[in-house]
Amino acid sequence: MPHAVSTQAAPAAIGPYSQAIRAGDFLFVSGQIPVDPATGGLVDGDVRAQSRRVLENVGAIIAAAGASFDRVVKTTVYLVDMNDFAAMNEEYAKFFGTPAPARATVQVGRLPKDVRVEIDAIVHLA
Image (tube, rainbow, N blue to C red; front, top):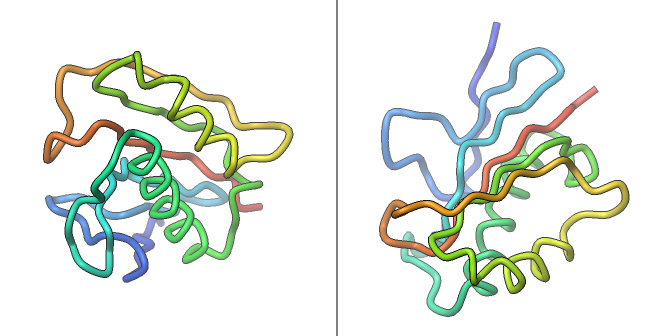
């Protein structure tokens, strides 16, 4: 049976969803935005700073499931402005080794709390 995975080291869900769901050997991490879990506030700064916080949040959830970034098989990056792609990509590359996970990056009209970036992930735990 699928079960929720959560940690106080990442922001609490702000709606009717879980930080992540473990289903068999896979962990599905909900989209994370640049909220500092210690303060509950948004991270100030450009898309680099926001991307770093988002990935730190994703990493905390993955760690709560007993895994690390090297187990990530797929991510989706949502950007409000595709002009932020290069800056986001530079931060993103700091978190992933080789081979990097499969990824889709899309531009969206708006994100929760009007942030610039959101990232979700699928992790293979076995």
